[in-house]
Length: 440
Ligand code: XLS
Ligand code: CA
Ligand code: CA
Image 1 (tube, protein in one colour):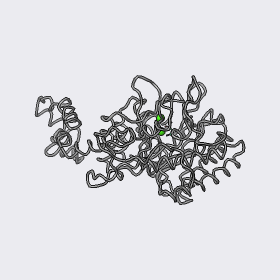
Image 2 (cartoon, helix red, strand yellow):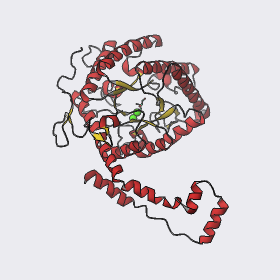
Image 3 (cartoon, helix red, strand yellow):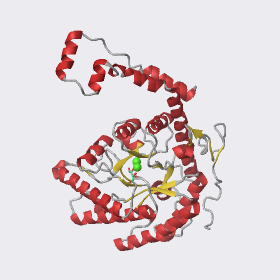
Image 4 (spheres, rainbow, N blue to C red):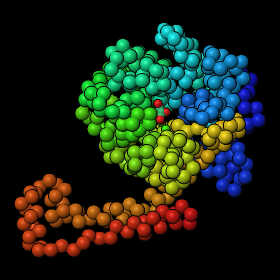
């Protein structure tokens, strides 16, 4: 057994809304039954390795503010990689977070030679596997980082260099091996550099076809080695590239259908990416759900005053409620809720790491409770159902059944001569209902 790293942090317990203990859950009560099932089954939370164990506060203007060495003598070593595993598993165990997500290069320092990188990945994944067996913690999804290394400057699947394309393929292959080894439920493609700055130097069609080829090979290989989970695309409209090919859910779904990848892929929807695309989080979830592709969620939030990806811990209960409303109506996720979020740079203590997760978990627990109340209340659903009632019989039913023609509808309209405006949308009444459920 490794020595304790977060020595002043106890196991985090549920103490209820009145608790003033910063190291306790106020709303996340894992065993509480909501709509017939324990909260923890509705909310399979995951820790994002990169933000929680790697990011230490460096930004464009300054260096690290937090200590993420976790006791290792030197950062960027295998000793440090193992210290991060120890810290991560202690962290998740203390919070009751049951899953983690990782990129290949989050879990080891990348070597100059890919063969050595892969050897380190084998070594660390053995170590991680041991911890998983000890604690019962599981892998939600794995992925390959194909955006940080300078070789991916012009993209990975969309690169102009066939040699670089092979390195992307090699990383995906290894990351899939690791995901299968660790029993991951999903495999994510976030195309960080899959986009462009200017069409003056870009063959957009060729790049998209090459990305699809790479994804197809990934699916073929994954299925061959026994990966039965979902592949995910994580849409994002911009940053780092000006134009990213996976702009939003609708764009990514269109791409998957065009290249025959839609049976193997679903969406991993991140709240901050949704708002960067000019959509609400709820919109992106709904688009995915109605296309049968709501897979997993990167649970965070952005800042409406800033135009970039701030990856903040979820705090906005309205957003979390509408998210959980979509998730409940879709019958749950095949994936989970990954906190792709980091503490603000000045929140630089170990305690802050825990308090951030407590905030995120409590926010989603509240969202779940309130979304369940909205569904049980039934007024919102009832309103939407009634709003379309004119399609239940008569000419409306014929339209829905596809049993009419433009000529017949035109004749119907001509006979009516004129038509009344349809019923009120009642947005303000419905917003009032949401408020009365949230705060009543
Ligand atoms: C970056 C993305 C990234 C993915 C995984 O903006 O959110 O962290 O979730 O590559
Ligand atoms: Ca993300
Ligand atoms: Ca993000």
